[in-house]
Length: 301
Ligand SMILES: Nc1ncnc2c1ncn2[C@@H]1O[C@H](COP(=O)(O)OP(=O)(O)O)[C@@H](O)[C@H]1O
Ligand SMILES: [Mg+2]
Image: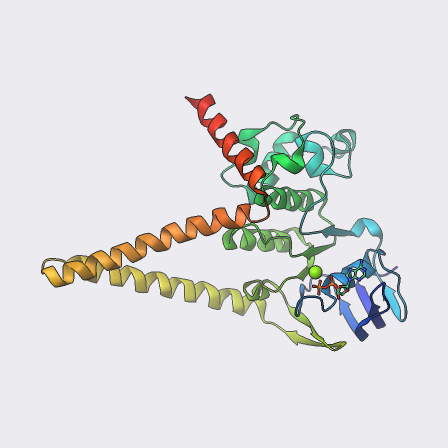
């Protein structure tokens, strides 16, 4: 057992005996966020299977803290039979939660971090029992998984492509919250936009090779913020030029174009969020989801 997660001369070998990564020497230190990248099938999730002891260690030494200090957050979270509360506090029981002095209001606050519109708690109470696998949308499942992470606050969180169904904005909030809570993250992702929340990139190159790269995460976040502000300013400027010159007929067309474009951008953003949210759901689940929406409106009306 150790303070950090470290690999010394570790080979990652698949159950079929294929050498995926050779002689990995790397340490994930507390407070230093690491992102694992590389093409599909290169062995990223396998690294986590070794940490979780799903796959045996063939060679080298793996040092890690106690089990309770590491929480795995897979792409599709494990959901249990029981109440909405049980989904968040798993593997704790309601009695464990009360013993810790945690209340349902505390859970409300934790879930609101990743579900600011409070869609989940508007639709169900903490005591609701459901077939959660079918009741939740893809995005809701990932939000619940994040709420579970905030509830347990482990020293290390291992995130395997687990924010694919939430918007960039919610993703940012998740990473900021982990930093605030002192949770060190070890992320698998091929989304370059996530690099800014990490301090080191561990890249699996394929052909069993690996490399590392340091990131100045604070500088990256600041640069990203400035770039977004520039884009916003530019589109605002475009919009105001277009509006002020909309008196002549030719520029009126231009004005419409610009307005149409900015309108489209908004629609696209909204759709993107919805699409991402639903991306992992079957059509049947989507229908259920829309059915639920209807019911909700019915209740209100
Ligand atoms: N349970 C398994 N049994 C045998 N081979 C597996 C198993 N899971 C993954 N693999 C193989 O191991 C390789 C690495 O997989 P994985 O680590 O999941 O890739 P990724 O980098 O996309 O996360 C792939 O070639 C995959 O086919
Ligand atoms: Mg994977």
